[in-house]
Amino acid sequence: MKINIIGAGPAGLYFAIYIKNKIPTAEITLYEKKAREAENGLGYVIQQELVQDLYQLDQEHIGELLEETSNQWNTAEIIAKEECLKIKFPLSAGLKRKTLITYLQKLAENRKIKINYNTILTPNNIEELRRSADLLVGADGIHSIVREQYKNHFEISTINGSNSFLWLKTKNRREYMNIALNEYKNNAYVTTSYPIGQDNTNCTILECNTKSLEETGFNNENGLTNIRTAVAQSFFNVLSPYTIEEQQLRWLTNNLNNCNNLSFDNIALIGESGIFPHYSMGAGLTCTFVASQHLADYIKQTDNTKEAIRIYNNTITPFLKNTQTQSLNKMKWLENINNHYKSLDGYDLINSFRFSQGRKE
Ligand SMILES: Cc1cc2nc3c(=O)[nH]c(=O)nc-3n(C[C@H](O)[C@H](O)[C@H](O)COP(=O)(O)OP(=O)(O)OC[C@H]3O[C@@H](n4cnc5c(N)ncnc54)[C@H](O)[C@@H]3O)c2cc1C
Image (cartoon, rainbow, N blue to C red; front, top):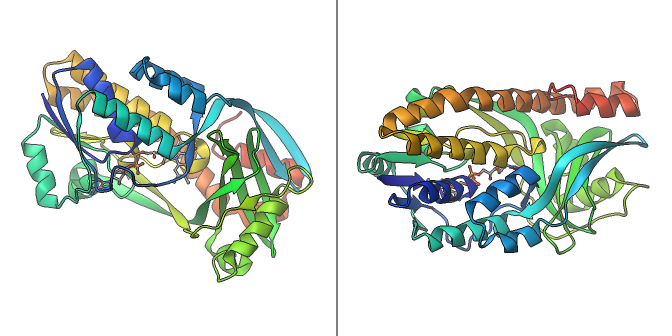
């Protein structure tokens, strides 16, 4: 069986290794536009269940990853207007993206899975890779060209969010997930922070709406100074101020991809090419791993790959849609954060945020 995969991020690599474990004779090639050593992104909240999934992938080498994820927590703290609520959180750890990717690359290489780095593909190349394989997998992330090329089949729509968010590498280690709702220069914003890796680093995400971005000065020439003040004040009296490392400030916008179909003919989408959950859900890797497992398991169970891909689509789409709906609810709440902040007191604000994705607990 011949499988071509576009994108060697968490989705492409995890799927390649998982299916190679199931079907050792499969000939798998990944095409990745970046270099092998490229740095990209900071880190994930990885739930214990997913660490188990990684354990199942390769029990011999998992030791090195277990050490990285040994600092686990099951608490999140939400702070707003001098009030603070500690809530239960699924047992999780922070994992650097680089650590995860390097680990998966090594597992893939051990299995003789071919990875072509620095490969920029055109639409013609993609069609060729589809025709020459039993299965073409689009694992090329939020700006997927596979999704774009066959968009009529996937029936895609994109909900463009009006909020912006920024990933920051901060120091002064936190013990668990911290979320603060706060105001800076009369504009509300949310700060989410969690420890990653073993070297006193946190992944901290700042989000506010586009108008606030201008009025707070978060994105002007003094952006880093304003951000430092805002992040420190987020956790005032509860946490010691952060040292934000010098870095290029890269504001991102939430775009929720919505595909009615995640497959057609011999093509399947996995990971963020098919669904983009809001970062605060901690659901990105879960959706990625679960979708990969379903796709590979159905292919293993049937001789007919196209039929397996069709079943994958019918079973996985409802599961992912649920996450998508929760993401959308959360996104809408955050786009309206200024009104919530002005109209609600501390605990009401905390609870309104807490249940904003539509879940009851
Ligand atoms: C701010 C933020 C915070 C997040 N936090 C969490 C979290 O806490 N927990 C969590 O589980 N998830 C989180 N996520 C989601 C997380 O990004 C996804 O779970 C995961 O990275 C998706 O993996 P992927 O492989 O689908 O996409 P990507 O990681 O984007 O990988 C796609 C790969 O495809 C390559 N590629 C793209 N286009 C092409 C092309 N044309 N040709 C060849 N290669 C190509 C890219 O270079 C990349 O290597 C977060 C996301 C964001 C933005």
